[in-house]
Image (tube, rainbow, N blue to C red; front, side, top):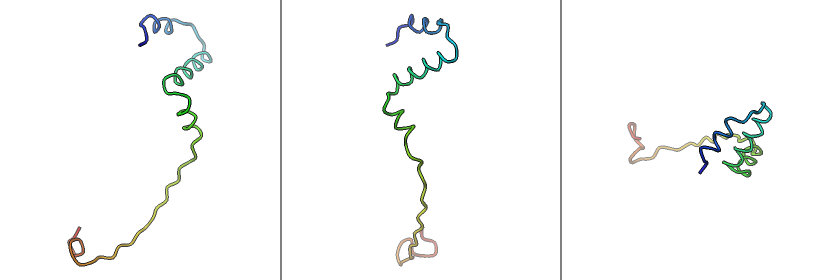
Amino acid sequence: MINIETIKKIGDKQMDRKDFLKFSGLALVAVVGFKPIVNFLTQPEKKVTIIETHHEATRGFGGGKYGA
């Protein structure tokens, strides 16, 4: 567990935007891990393919005028 004193030290530390982004990035890698971040950044763009199918109605349940 993270100690309260450690959180206070981090909050009181003077840093500019560049240092803050470095610290935030390292904290993210420490919490999530390196491999999931790399996989997320390098995954190919997913394309959606629509496949149309045609089902012929047959006799029995679902085949009638009011069937499901």
